[in-house]
Length: 136
Image (cartoon, rainbow, N blue to C red; front, top):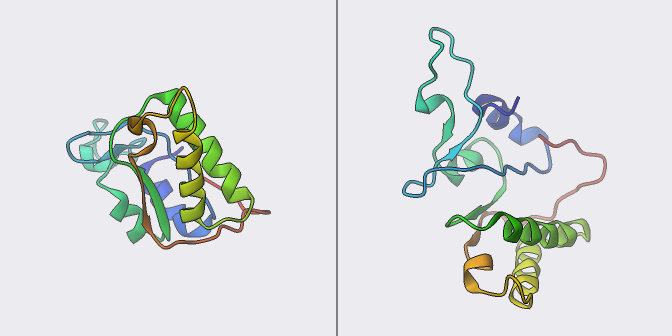
């Protein structure tokens, strides 16, 4: 159900969208489920690739957290767990990002730069209202 069209359409109606996806390392494009092809059963790249964090901002997202390179799945899970823990406390996204990086740096298992440094915040430094909101 998380087609490119549906995700971009619903961005302005939710407080938080988390997309764990793979993409093209050289261009930064991420892969979502393809938009339903009207004339063909073979979707084209434009139907399922989101070209960059700018697409999300253009669709209404106020803030986007992206990774500049691929990261180990377990390290990403731990990083995001720390990040969301801070967001739930009511911290601004920049503060949550900073705290998640600090926790990872102090971790024995994921203290290396490659595990925490690729995360970059693009857009506004917002505080999320997470109580009673929907998410995609």
